[in-house]
Length: 400
Image (cartoon, rainbow, N blue to C red; front, top):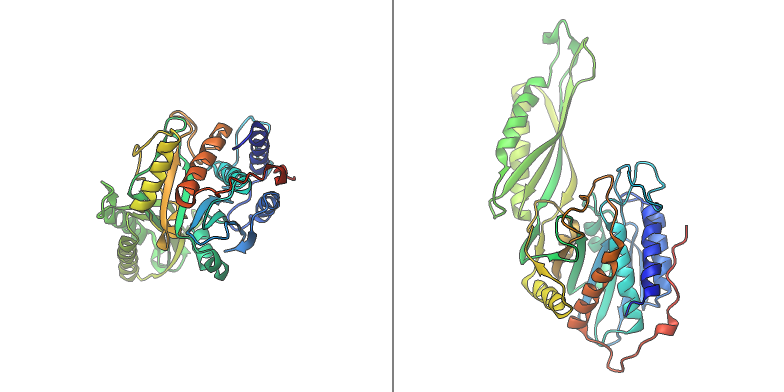
């Protein structure tokens, strides 16, 4: 149902999004462009400001049935792009190098299909979620009172994942993305002259012991229920001076587990290690939690629907490369809905996500749209009158 003109316009729109990336929590203009594009599709309703800058379009059949949500992300990354393309980022230090511009565009393509040929029952929700990259967006959306009006029974998402053949989808039942949590540990004592370090209280020895003790809490292994991984990502002690013995320091640790329940236990152990060492060396300690991602678990029924849809339209799929250690906050939508994440391949040798030379391959737009559309038809059918409202749909154009 997507014409060549549709694909040209959607590609143009995707590249416009790519030119103007916005970071987590800052997606004002991105949300505005998405909202404007959705209005031309005549959805039943558009909700804005969900969990921050989230946008949701509702396509309601007017008949009883399940609510099926399809999610994309609005935010970009704080990475300087290094691409020789006409649509490269125009915002220094920010770029869409995780594919979110393409994910949004695939949802807009689905919206065109839903507008032209409505589902027979229930509702389709196009959810454009803010702040995925720091793990806060999905939780904020589902906690928003307005979300209760569009509570999903089923939820699906596609994320581009390099390393897979072009058009191949990796997915599986159960775990698809690990839970993760960023723990900032700050240790404070007292500075002293470097010639008289005994006059101060340095965190150096405590941090020297803390790093291996945190490492020992989780060293990876198979992605089963016992999986634990602690990665030290940043360490700082004192100031860059030769005359001052340090009085404070900090350690950043990323904790990973395969289940949300396991994360609580791992975090408790990490905090206890820091508290014990702080007491041993006469330091104070405080903690801050950042980038807190729930585990993404594919429901067996949602997985079955997605694979049935892909089989029907000839999309190759399997479990290559999944589950993954990497995190994704889509799992939050699965707390109250049957959810499934699909990992769509751009090519085995394609640039990796978060690399400065990554750019979403536009040829994947129709593939993602087709998968989403078939899932919607599997669950909600097509209006019995076969109505196609093609003349009512105006072009979806990005506005700079």
